[in-house]
Length: 377
Image 1 (cartoon, rainbow, N blue to C red):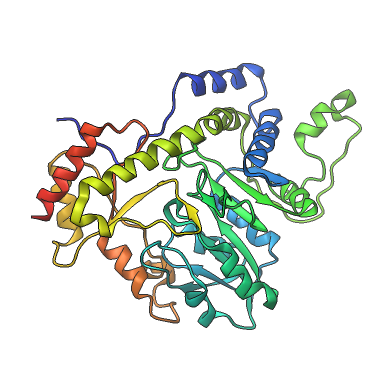
Image 2 (image 1 turned 30 degrees about the horizontal axis):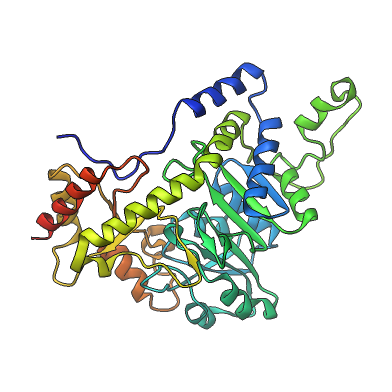
C-alpha cells in the first residue's frame, strides 16, 4: 500500500518548460523574469511594490531592517510559528518577545499582544498561521498609535483573504514564502511587499549587497553598463532570487486560484468525514478565508499521546506531521517567555497536520480519516 504523503507540490510540465526556457535564455540569476514575477505578484495582491528574495526568512530579515529594528529593540512575535519568525528579529540584534495565540486560529490577538508592549517595543510580527488570516486591523489599531510597526509574516498565506482582499495586501510590510510546503512554490524563494516606494527601492538594494545599480540594470544599459559604476552606501546582503525560480513562480501564480479552491474543498470534506473530531480542526475567522496551507487537528481530550497517533498513522500508510512548533521551547529561546503561553503549548503538543494537497483523492482522504480513527483507538 502506497503511503499518503502530507504534502505534494502541484508542479508539472509547464513549470519544467518555464525553467528550461530561463536556462536557455542564458540569464539564470536575478534578471527580467524576477522583475516580471514581482510585477505579477504585486498585481495579484493589489499592492504597489513587491521585492523577490531567496526565502521568506530573508524576506523577514529585510522587513526587520526596513522597520528599523536593531540592538535594544523588542519585537513581539508569536512563539507558535516556524523558528525563522523569531530568528529574523535576532539577526538584526533585536529581542523577540513571545506572545500567546488564539487556540482556534493559532494567531495573535490584541489581548495576547497588549501585556507585552513596552517602551522598547519597535515592531510586532503577526503570522497568518497555516494560511489562517490574522486580524491585522485589530493589531494595528492597538500598536500603531504608539509608533510601533506591524510586519505581517504571510509565509503561508498566498491565496488567503482578509476582509475581501488578499492576505497581506493591507500590511505596511509583509513577507511571503515559496517553499515547497506552501501552495505557490519556486523551490525556495520569498517576497517582501510594502506600500512605500522608497522602502521598496532600499530593499532591492539591500538584497543585492547594497549595490546602487543592479547587475540586471547594468546589463540592460547602453554599452553593457560600462559607464555605470555602482556604489555601496550601506551593508547589504545576498538575498536574491534567480530567474529560474521566478519562471516557475509565474506559472504557479496562474494556478493559485485553482489550488486554493481545491484545498478548501478538501478541507470542507475533512470536516464532514471527521464528524465528532471536527471540532478540533483549525477554525476560519469571520474576517477572512484561509487557503488551508496546513490542515491541523487538535487531538481530543483523552486521546493517546501524539507520538502514538503519528506512529499509528504511519503504520497504516498515512504520513502526518506534528503541529506547528513553539519557538520558546527550543534551545535558543528556552526560558525566555515572559508570560505563560498555554494556547501555544497546547497546540504545539497536541495537534497534528493532516495530508492535504491538490492531487489528494477522495479515496485517499477516506483512508486518512479511517487510519486516524483507528489510531485514536
